[in-house]
Each structure stands twice: as structure tokens, then as C-alpha cells.
Image (tube, rainbow, N blue to C red):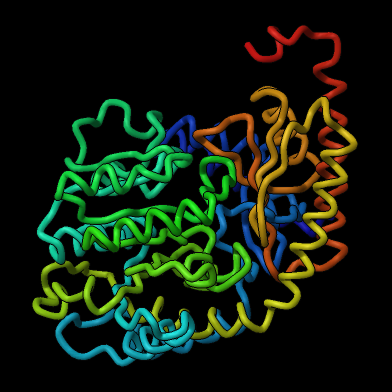
Length: 428
């Protein structure tokens, strides 16, 4: 699918990559060049991104941000209206746009968690939740999970498991412990030391290849944390807001959590917004002193205007999202069954799926061929043999079919391209 190209478009890619190499990162420029087949992104609408050569590519990636597609009209209208009145907050006067967003978000999750802190990215929400847990309990130890990802700022990074992100930066924030996700007794053992402040987990580990954690394990860990007087934090920045099915996987599973962390699509794919939605007990330090944790652009009006519009748009598309999920599940099962030599496992739920391939080289070949076929995906940086698919809930049946056909073709391409090579050669 190709659209008309202007003179400016014709030179945009070359200029962009030169600037990226000179002022940001040569590696970033190279990755972008591969993903766009030498072109750059210029505009987007719905599930599609326009490139500088006029081609349109289907976006089943964007790292979970575009749940309701690019530039959803209701979200764009809400942000544009706010832009025309007051785009930034004084940080001294009351902010009515933030007050509405907080009330809407609390109600959206069922009102069991009545307090909200707004940030701009996922790590913001993680940082404030952990800080609140330490203040509320007077303790330091936080149990995270092996394979978990919670961000790359220094506090959140202590909870992120993979060595790739931690290398060269340790010692990080003290008190972080990573529990084996098969060890039901892990939280009880740590709690016995008397210093447990919180347990934090992703119900589905996105960056680790879309790995769901056992609900029974999470129920046990939550109960053990509760018995110890510690906080329970569900990091749903990637899988919440119906990406993983329900509005919140933790709350839908009946887990007695003190916070649900949200982000990615919370700004409707238009502006960056994150949130820690908390219990009264966990949030108490900020009730006592609201300046204990602040950020200049936290609860900024453009993002706050986006939140209610995004929540309404998500609910309006929820039924279609369920259809997209069912089509993806059936299509990926067929892909796996028909290609057991290349596709070793498919995992996922809702609108987040992980595909394991026979090797990292197979995954690399498939990602590059998908780019040629016009499908954007999200690789897993800490699991190079795995490809992550994040379809928008607004995708049509034809768009899902296009994605599945592209995957089928890319798997066949990788098989043919690597045929005749030994296992050692492919893996090396």
C-alpha cells in the first residue's frame, strides 16, 4: 500500500538517519533503518503508519501504546481542546482536568483503589509505588520476580531482572529481591526476616516474552504479603486497560492488591501518561504530605484530558478487541501447528502474544522479512528468540488476516533462508 510522496518526503529518511547517527545513536539509526527498510515514519492513523516513501505498514507493535490505534479521533479532540485553553499546569493552583481524570480512572477500576498518582511513563508509576510502600511500612525489602521488567530508572531498574539492563550500574537501589516464579513459598520466606515492604509483579511478563504468571502463585504471594503487613503492587503498565483482556488482570483475578500500575495506552496513544492507582493505606504518605513525591509534568493537563477520552474509547472497542483476540489465538495456533520446526511455542492472552522461534537467528530473519511485508512488531530485548505481537483492539478482520498472512510468509522465508545450515551455525 503506497501513497503519494512529496519532495520533502524523498529526502526525509536520509536526513533523519544522518541526524540520529550524529546526535543520538548510530545503533538507533541502524535499527530504525532496518525496521523501515530505509524509510522513516511520517504519519499514522488507526492501525497504519505511513513511511517516507509513501508505503503504509500495519502496526502490531509500538510497545503496547497504540491499543486504540494511532490518533484516535476522540482522544485527539480532547487533547486539542485542552491545548487551546491551558496546556500546562501552574503546579500551584488546583487542576480540574487532573481531578476529573483521577475520578474517572478510579471508577473505571471499580473504586476499590481510590487514590491516584499520575506520571508520564511507566517507571514513574513504579518509582512512586515502591517509595510509598517503603514509607507506609517503614521497611526496605521489595520482592520482584525473575524475568520481570519494571523500567530502567535507577529505582525501577533494581526490580527489573534481566542482566542486560543492569550491567555496569550495580549496586542499584538496595533491598530488591528477585523470586523464582515457580516458588510459592518465596514471599513467606522473605517476610520472615521482618523487613518486607512490598511485592511487585506483572501478571503477564511482557518484555520476558509474554509469560503469564500462575494465578495460584500470585494468590499465595498476595496472601503472604498481606499477612506480613506488606504492600502488593500489580504492574499492569503493559497488560492493563484490556490489553490482557480485563480492565485489570489482578483485580479481575480477585487479588487483594494495594496498587495497580497503568501506562502505555492510558494517554490514548496520543500523549504519555502513567498512573499508580492505590489504596488509601498505601497512598497515606502522600495524603499527609503531597510534596513527598512530585514531578513538574506529572498530571499535566494534556495527558489528563486524554485519560477520560481514552477510557471511553477502550470500552467502546472492547467487543471488537475480543474478536481480534480470538482471531489472533486461532491464527497463531494454526501457525504453530503447521511450523513446529520454526515456531516452538506461542503464549499470550487478549491482545498481547509472544512467539518463540527455534533460534534468535530465526527470529531476526522473521522480523526483517515482516518489515518487508509491511508488518511492525515488537521484539523482546531480553529474549531475542521471541517476537511480541501487540494488535490494536480496533483492528479489522482484514487487518488481522493481513498480519497472520505476513507471519506465515515470514516463517516460510526464514525456513528457506536458513535451510541447509547446521543447528550450530544457525544458533551461533
